[in-house]
Length: 253
Image 1 (cartoon, rainbow, N blue to C red):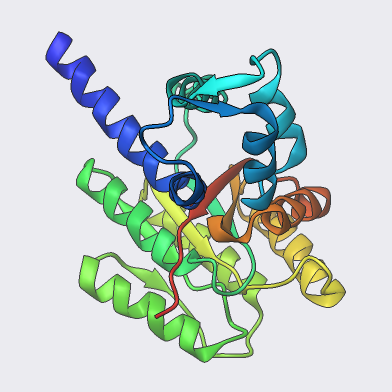
Image 2 (spheres, rainbow, N blue to C red; image 1 turned 180 degrees about the vertical axis):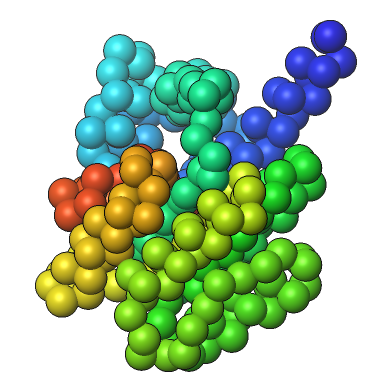
């Protein structure tokens, strides 16, 4: 049990280090390792420059002394992410429908593939819906993942009604006793009125196909976008109500 706990802790450390890699690099660039303490104002300034929301900075810095050790700062930052809400895994609907939304380039399609692969490895029957009919490339990309993972997909041609794809995907999942449905949507900015009305329509049509669907509306955010990603999440939540957030670390080469 102790070994399992240590392994879990190591994984959490790895995720934390990756998420805050830019912030830690900023610290290292101006603070030598030999320096034991860092003054409060310097830390606050670095966190602001790292584009962290000021409410989070206030929570992180609240109650800390004027001079802070690296260990104290790290512990405080970790504490902010320790208390995630528990997810009730009992009485999960079948099929369980997840609608994936977000702006272009955040990694939606790749995230769908990763989720689908995870569900399949856990023994679940999965179905994909290529609801991004705005870009032909999006349909092709999800189809390639479908072929690679050997997971069926419901799709149509570019320009067709994306809500119809969502309806057909859920209907097919009901007929084929599928466990998990993952529906892609077109990348859109929170300011694009027409596309966001389309998103509202997709949500309503999903509910017509299966009462209560989509059971989760997940937004995929690029973690390198800082506070603009927070603004995206808030805006989309006002449009359709977001149930969960997936933060990616996209790199353009």
